[in-house]
Image (cartoon, rainbow, N blue to C red; front, top):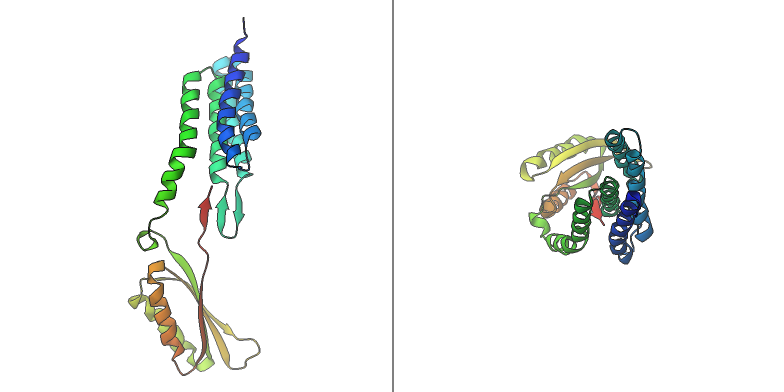
Length: 235
């Protein structure tokens, strides 16, 4: 007769392989071996709890530790690269793989198989759906971008320039993040006014109109603006 723990480990291994193959095909940071080891490891820990004197309490406590432990493991595959976050989906897959392993360790094979099927569906079927939704025009997306406006002017025109920037909030739907002035190094009598603004990308043309308007002021020698890159989340 096959021991119960062997059956649990075998099913956890098979389900971990099923999830890991999909990750490996897409060449993610956590592929076939990593996902399989997470599922088997979670099953091993919970099986250890099942072998304790108080099986129910032991499995529950160990399962809680597995959840927190996998959280640290998932954090290791999340990377920040030039304004984007990569690996979040892989980290979530590791988390779900641990849940599948825990279910196998507790003998709940039905929910474990169903969970595996849902994870695979989320990483395949919903992948195409998310790409379709990402084609939503920027003009209708609920996002905001931070802009930095830089104005170089004479010291005596500082108040006037700051007033123009402040009054712009009535004409353009934007919000000020900060507004500061400082001496321009190497140019006596000149100041640099820096304004941190936030507005919707569809209103960028109005920001260009504002900077063009300020550039016509007599005491202004230079005007420029730059948008900070959006922080994107990628798989």
